[in-house]
Length: 338
Image 1 (cartoon, rainbow, N blue to C red):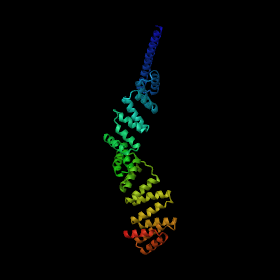
Image 2: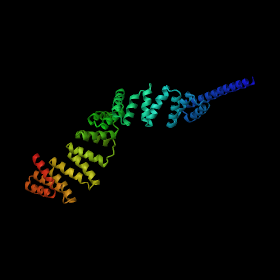
Image 3: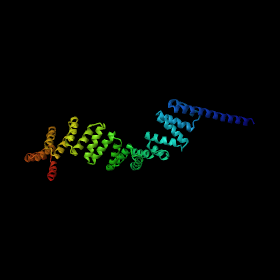
Image 4: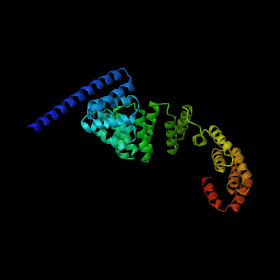
């Protein structure tokens, strides 16, 4: 009989302790909610921690504690809180939604995709999945989701840009262009996007559009490095804006005076644009750097021929072929063009 009395006493004590813990937990939880509503997040977090110490598996308290950490930008602690709620209540929509966004922000893309597929309250499921699939280099899967996201929100510049990048990474440059164009219209502050679009135009031989976009990128603040000026310069030259292109390339040559490739390109482009004296000037610079430069001598000869000094030009071309016999084939091609 005494044995059963002891068991009953222990049971009653356990129930009483549990009830007392619940009361204490509720007390600190309400204090935390008050502080949270007043945006005193640090104090609120301490009250919630105290409440959790009395009820470690109370999902309601853990959820509110996670939201406080979110407000405090303590994202790792918020993540752990929402994960615990999800473990306790796998169908908790708030926890699933927050985990979807946090996993994406933490670049845990596979987990972000997994959560997004479960999220019934998220209005950005296609965006999260599409952006995550792109980061995981699953380009076909990313394409369908990003298109759906852009259809849902046509003013999402980042989605439009990422869709363009997605096509770019699939080597489908023409398909990338309209999405890049859309992205820079939506957000005209993105100088990098403009520069990338300019490079795509350049590679697609649309030099006039490339010049326009390089110009916009510069105006939007893109750093005008030597590479930028070189690409801009050649786009301008190929687009027929000879003076502008030459100025940009010469600016690069000031910093790279030993770059014979740029000099040679200028000599050839000036020749093709019938600016024979300017072409000769660049040929002269090349031969000053290397008196045995057969290509420069041959180019100079062609310029003299075009200027009407055929004998002088022919002699120079013959001399160049003696210096570099491989130029004989080049002469045949030039003669066919003439």
